[in-house]
Length: 231
Length: 231
DNA sequence: GTTTCGATCTCGCAA
DNA sequence: TTGCGAGGTCGAAAC
Image (cartoon, rainbow over all chains, first blue to last red; front, side, top):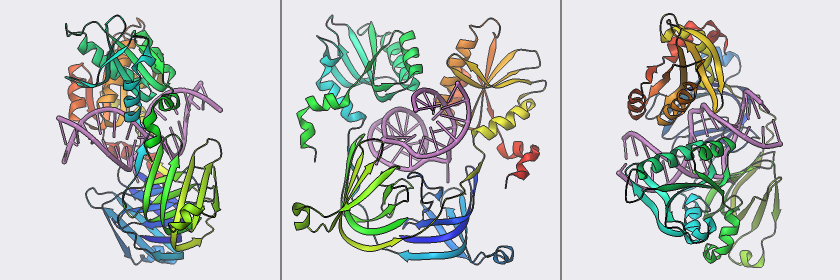
């Protein structure tokens, strides 16, 4: 990994075109040839970048650039597409290289899969007498997150999201349409369950007779005793 | 901006929990208190991070950590939520700080908004006699990108994407369904226009009687004389 | 402020 | 390889 702090201007041409005027920034060159251009603010997204795999060539500036103070030009090219990034360097304030080795990677907890596991174990949160049929119930067009029966024995398809928006309602609608054609399952009701549901999604869901439910992940995790065993 | 290369382990707790085992990484601390943890590969997304605004405190390791070689602990806390990031540092290979100043920011060209503006100005690309009714035509479920009339005076709803996939077709279908219930507009045809259309999206669109059109952004930009004024 | 939607999205998984 | 869905999405524009 190479770290350079320098005054530079940057141009990207590929899926779009983008330009960064001259300013002091961090240039980060990774072992796979990818390049990140960071300013001293904003979030984790660089101002400009080149994805791996890429190759970086440092070349002499052309006459026109040299006369305005450019000392070095980086031509960064993507290996598979014709995306390219041109970095014009005026003056370098820092330049160092470091050996890092490969990374063991990140371990996560609390994503949709965890919500699904918890709700499957605590299916009665949806209503007294509910029982789980199975998780990831397979249909011709994809898996329904949870399939359950209510206290009357009627089939209920549950679509789970961390954040419920209109796409999730469409997805559940397709499943319900398909499942209601199956005489062994019909009639099937739908429940759209999420930690948060957007107003437009709620409107669309309720217009289609789909029940909306807000889930409290912390409360559900509190009930689950395996949470304390994670780390 | 502070750059540290160090052996470290990292724990995040907030909207989820995540853990990084001990390894050598780049730790980047920005002026706004945000912290990025990068390995020497992958794309621009850090392995772990804290978004601004945040505050970073360096503290002495506790007894338990010190005995396993931890020399320093960074406690990074978000200012508005209770997200926190704990970095345990074993040994530092590099540590430097740099003044960067504020960044003038990125100038972009070629995103969906540009496509929309160009197609609105060149609506006859879609067919002789087409005229624009308006951009961002509002409906109860959201705005239609472009509303036009064809040479016969019939209403045409246009959905614009840079890359056309199945979601865009679903979106246009919803608009068409709604607009065709409005006697002042009906009948409304649909056009799905994009720089690139995925085969599955094309099949679905044509199955629903929606016309597919590939847009040549470079050609459209060539017609537009404002393109030369961008940089 | 909040909400909505595009993104050079990135990332992971499964068919 | 490609497609699909999630994301600690990020970011900007509209309301």
